[in-house]
Length: 217
Image 1 (tube, rainbow, N blue to C red):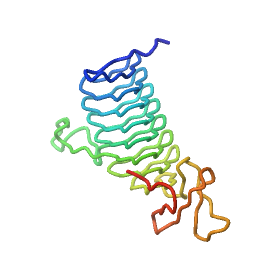
Image 2 (image 1 turned 60 degrees about the vertical axis):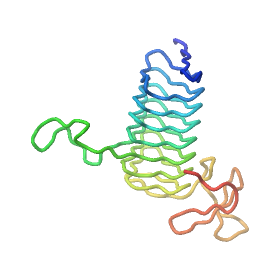
Image 3 (image 1 turned 90 degrees about the horizontal axis):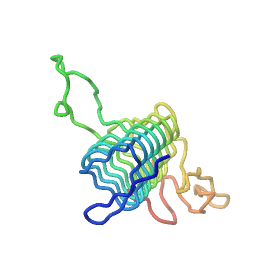
């Protein structure tokens, strides 16, 4: 397999691009980011440091991606999506941008970019979208949330929520490691991360952090 080619911006920021990838000269790529074979990064996209863009993935015009994100093979991230730091986008995930898709206008003429207003998906810090999930814009997925593989998300997802299904519904809550929170054995109404020991409490349709760092968008 051909090796990655290192590129350096005018600001001496080095990142790597595999042969066959299409990265616009107008995109801004952070230091240490790797863009693999056949991926496309469009004009004015902004990728933070230490990201990975997998084979055949698409990053639309003006999309913003934070640092340490992973966008897996053949994922489609359409503008104007916004990904915070540490977001995981699984293989073949689709972030849509058109609420009322049509190829033509009512008069039969083909639609152009000026004939519709793009709407985006916003994903909070540390959240993960499982393989082949579809997120139907406009919506927001909260920090550390987990969308199960194959889900179709049609409404906002709270911080730390675990959602699954078609349409996706909340099945529980997860901690920062992605593991489902468990009831505390000693404290009523308290949920505990089995990996980190961090404690949480439900507050209606939201989750309150009792200790540890509050979620950030």
